[in-house]
Length: 302
Image (cartoon, rainbow, N blue to C red; front, side, top):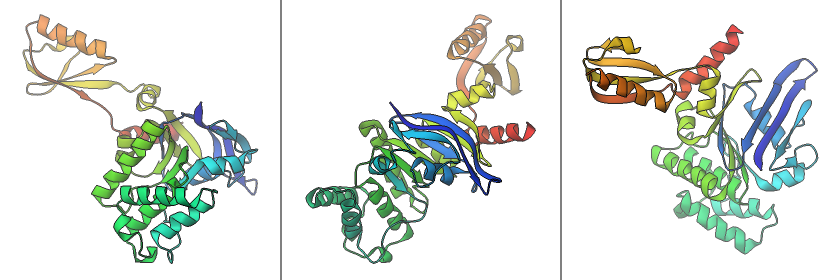
């Protein structure tokens, strides 16, 4: 089963301005998707439509097979949402917030408390759980918001900048938790972020969005292939002949475009067969940031 399906989602305001223009993608269950784009690109509008908060002007979608237009109440029960700004009651303690939001899902009080304690410990808030949230730092409030999104054990998570405002240790803790939920509990995650390096670390799928349009969607490998981008290998060695299609870029350092792992083996064999020496071979891969901006440039050229 697919975790999230977006089918030609379009959102118009006043019949003129298109906040979204024909957004489509399919995210398999249990995968993490980085939804990447600048402010105003349509990320938040897409999330609100998939959550059933907004209705699309055109198109439809499904969350674990549930129709977003016809089964929004059921969708709310299985989804957790964390916005960029902390969404909790500041005059309540962290534990009181979790008890309150958990009760809205009809969960037994004893179960809510058990889950709350577990989440507060996991997110390193347990020692401060009796303090009012207004006394918390920005990062602590952010972690309370994540705990609220997780209190009903959702099967689909919509996260907006989940690690912004967190120190490196807590950011690493949150990242580890998200990965575990995806891998062990098959939780599907749609993660909106501006941090491309962070997305590269945590996501399996990527959606590049700009001005309401999906510029590209897929795994990293699929996105590079769509642009016909070639991977290079960097070879450190001696007596390497350039007639093999290898280009010398510095003393003892060479570059070669390759299309597959099999081709790398063939290049190495060719060098050794001609008497060359190889000290080191490394892949030179494009970064997610470079890939994203290549898609943006490609869209502008079109």
